Length: 397
Ligand SMILES: C[S@@+](CC[C@H](N)C(=O)[O-])C[C@H]1O[C@@H](n2cnc3c(N)ncnc32)[C@H](O)[C@@H]1O
Image (cartoon, rainbow, N blue to C red; front, side):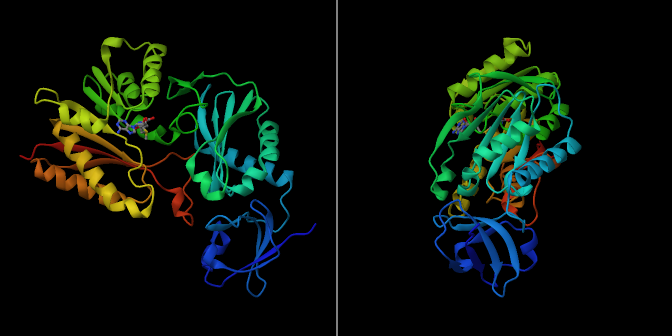
């Protein structure tokens, strides 16, 4: 088989070679031939030391995605990688009946550009690299081979980041029969899952552990779940005995899901208030008499790239200011950020300052991130993006 060789400059960090998966355009020294987007090439350092096979993409800043193998990747290679990823999930978490989990988290599982989520009897793949797009058929076959109980697979390839790889945006039933929606479970709570036409791959799986952590603070309390999506946090609050939960989101579809999730879990409609509104506007409009015991804020990423870090900081500051304003004097604030570019220390700094201005104290009583099915790869910092903390924010004595 003819495989093009790509030579990488010495500045590609020596220590990282073993584990890092990305080689950027300015780290490429020579390309022997004219490989196309998605081709598998042989990568080596100048002087010949091998980096192994890699996906190549001339249109992307990420020119090579290393596959960490010196044997040409065949079907057995992909099966092996998928099996190893699944074994880690089976070791690190209890998968409940009708359960949902992330089977593959891209570069963290040495499957560059592949996200694979399981929702009960169905799987959703999301492909973020041209190389993986080319392997789609073999990956789908391998998934079916490893998990024969699956009834269908959706390709949810509608995320804008695919454009950076020159890939089209689409969503499609890739294999099998997939209903418009079905029911899955997390921590015993039922959720209506509808990946086609929905956000993410169907559910925000990355908040699984954090949702449990708010439970102890919610019994007999009033809770505001701001940016609720399908209501993951608020439903856990109700499960833990919250008196009433306000669910706020700008998406009508998301609130429809909250409504059906409430019903499916047998929560009385009197214990829930559903509000379709921009969260900033909602918080701004609250009067003195509207205060909550627990406020949860889980906004979309305010910084999608490095250029937006400063404006994201302003956004989080404003959000914390308004969230603290509607928090009862002895309240609990749970705050999440999925902005990779904004650091946890900055978020806590902003909260500390806003709390001080409002005469409040802050004690961080819990810090979290994504669950074990989103493993963090220390050589791939991008695999760590979610920050979550629970803060006790009483008025200062
Ligand atoms: C990170 S998700 C929240 C996930 C959710 N907490 C969960 O546990 O599944 C962010 C949500 O914010 C909503 N959203 C985006 N911009 C908004 C805005 N300005 N006001 C209200 N909701 C917004 C989106 O519809 C989405 O459901």
